[in-house]
Image (cartoon, rainbow, N blue to C red):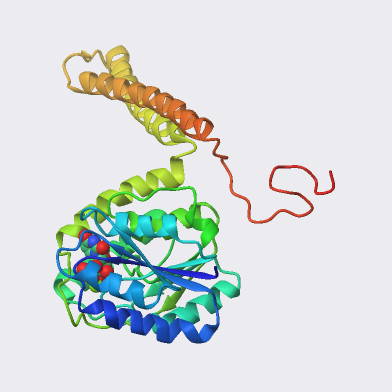
Length: 323
Ligand code: UDP
Ligand code: MG
């Protein structure tokens, strides 16, 4: 299988036939082996019926995964990825705001050697105050914190080489951070401006509250992508910083006491310094516990701490090819 298109669907009954049309029109002429995985995320309208009708019509290309209840867009996407068998996986929304006509250009970029092609809704057709503006701020923040510089994390339309999608699980609202995970395993990423249309049928499922969730997820992602292998660097670094701060405070009190005869207990600085010292020490201990957890994580699952792009004269199990 060359291409899998994964689409989460929640209450999109009017969009489904049009979506299928648009995907087929875009993909069929490419002469690839392809499939579209439509994940019904517990829709309450006729979406599942519409999907089943499609699957009956085009059993060669249409696959359906029906979740038992509404688990959210990220979980639906994860279910689709888990069942996809294509070498390239393209994610997109079901509401036709993304345009499947962009898929061939994305595949060209993958063929050029990129691992991730990230769609960028350069000319976005959503409400400015509640969607476009918060999203622009969030994108700036994510890009500054993670060091993966993309204009549009929120655009679902992205193409991935399969290998970069393995090795992590998606939680919360985290599908938008897949490029960050991919980058942490060494993926080559390129951005591609894509079309964006206003929603014609159905309702948008999110509002402003999503921005808060995205920012909380950002903490987790930053921690996991930068420190998951070496948590002691974060906790220990904080600990050493705090203990140094407390050391400076205590030294200052000591000098004042010895040379100027000022009582140590007369100022709150003494209590503060001791407290900061304890915090710093605790932080180092927490780092050590985190190190234990990391070892359990990697060793219990036999997960390596590195990822390989290519082997030459070597098979994946580590022997040279002729023995
Ligand atoms: N979606 C889903 N489960 C949900 C909410 C949304 O599968 O709980 C799907 C929805 O059907 C659509 C995509 O996720 O295909 C994006 O949803 P929406 O268009 O509402 O989000 P926006 O484009 O506003 O970010
Ligand atoms: Mg949408």
